[in-house]
Image (cartoon, rainbow, N blue to C red; front, side):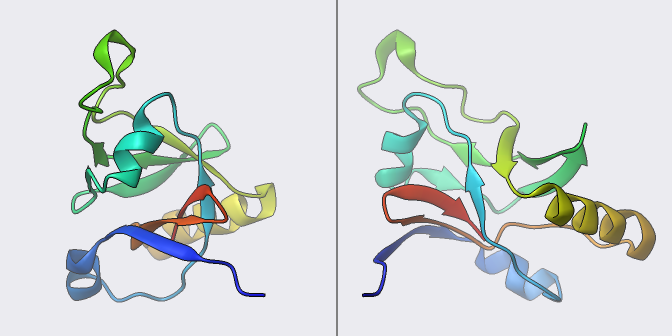
Length: 119
């Protein structure tokens, strides 16, 4: 049985500007109306990148538009979002950033088995 994947957004700019050495799937910590905005495809990640901060992987400069029916419960469009990875994976990517001068860029955001994932 294959899992259904619904791609929400892809970062075509990253494939042209960077040489993709390796990819990784991570979960995303989302708040409130961010999931509803993602399901509507209201995301821009053309300038997004990831950093390791305090032992956690963070997604920066990813714009998820506020949900149109969110009212005062709406989220900020651009704020650091935590990515869910194992410690060993975070450490491996941190070393690559520091030693080899790599940049971690998101390639796509999608829903897999009802959960938001990022590659």
